[in-house]
Image 1: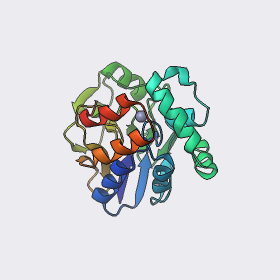
Image 2 (image 1 turned 135 degrees about the vertical axis):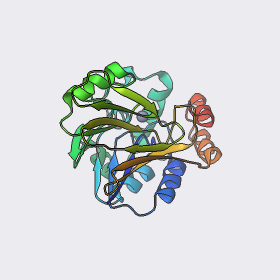
Image 3 (image 1 turned 135 degrees about the horizontal axis):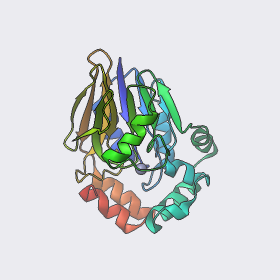
Image 4 (image 1 turned 90 degrees about the vertical axis):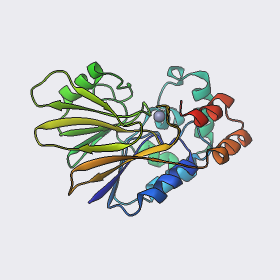
Length: 243
Ligand code: ZN
């Protein structure tokens, strides 16, 4: 089976469509949340994701903030402005969809969570924070998003300090027996690892590999739409740099 691993779409339809085009046919879809916030197409992005095969999806902080279920005082001014705008755009059907998303979900060998297991809306940014999630894992692999940085941690059973590897330029993680993994396949709609290309993952259950791919998309087109929607200039500019 081929599984798509999608995260942090952030209402960027151009990036999402480029990823879906690159992906080809999949049997199942794993989504790590933040479908909305920042970008100009929240409804269309949610509808694309809902139409994907055998979808398992968890909520991100922007999804909950757009519903008024997450305190936006945690957000910087630009993020807050964009997420409140997202919330105003959502139709009832898509609002209900976001409202029904769980914070964590187990699917086969995977646990899905937006940020980290101790606190689903916290960033996992270090080997120390990875260790806290490893301690709570009940599956061999945890898939996370939230940081928009493509990377992974792995921990041989019984050791305390997780190893870390970057996936900024894409790459493959081969899942080995006796090893546990935390994998972040990067962000689709607003990469922040210095690579402006949209990032996503593909899990092949026969080969037991997770491949992270980076995909070009029409950044200028989404920036034009963001200007038309009067979204914050800083959010528009950062797409160019992947920061
Ligand atoms: Zn995000």
